[in-house]
Length: 325
Ligand code: UDP
Ligand code: MG
Image (cartoon, rainbow, N blue to C red):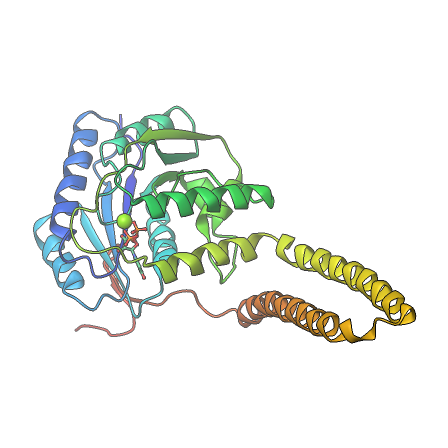
């Protein structure tokens, strides 16, 4: 029996230190799955070079020459993790029945891919890899992540806690996902919206195999903020609520000031004026900032700019842009 064609998509940004090992481990997983007749022989690993500045693409080309599983997709510029992943998914979906996405750094347990495939064969369209323990992450990263999931859930965004971008998706689920054309891409928030039968698989998250995290604090905060503002208008409502609160407090303070004035204690006026000016001014700034954030988002969305550009597509053997004769 010919099993489903699986493609493993791996976004890579400056991953020269881990790439050969990642390729080796993923190939071993594919070989085993093929030998056990769980997937088709045409299954592949698709490395997406997200405009790396190091030797990542050269290593992908080298792997392609020696390893029949390996295919490469080279983006023309750094498009960011989410866009690079989307580029890989869109490319892989053309020739696969199901696609697994995984980071290049081997933090996710490659052995779990087998369970993903089994779940897919049981009829699930989306299989989420969920980290059981996060012991290898720093306390800071764990605490901020926990806070983030709590906040997201509170404001009504359905996220799978402790799930990063390690998952399997069927072709039909992917095709639904591709209909979401938003520029501010936050796949983890979108995929639960797609629907279809879904399940979770738990695993232990490990230390990065080599190299450094490409998500420093600044990027992590931007990512979290993007996630919130792309999926929810609760922050705007919260600001409106704060505005109401400020008006009520100011009105009460105003009443008090007038009462003091009438009673003849006028010298206390300076403090209350200063406080209310700063308070209201601060609120206005906050409100303007949050509204500005949404307007910025709308601005980016309406331009409908392409989310990534492909320079070399070695998955379907087409060289785009620069033709090599
Ligand atoms: N990545 C990418 N483009 C970027 C940044 C990161 O393709 O602009 C890739 C990176 O190579 C890795 C994955 O996204 O495969 C996740 O990044 P990383 O492991 O550094 O994030 P962390 O696990 O520290 O959150
Ligand atoms: Mg990582």
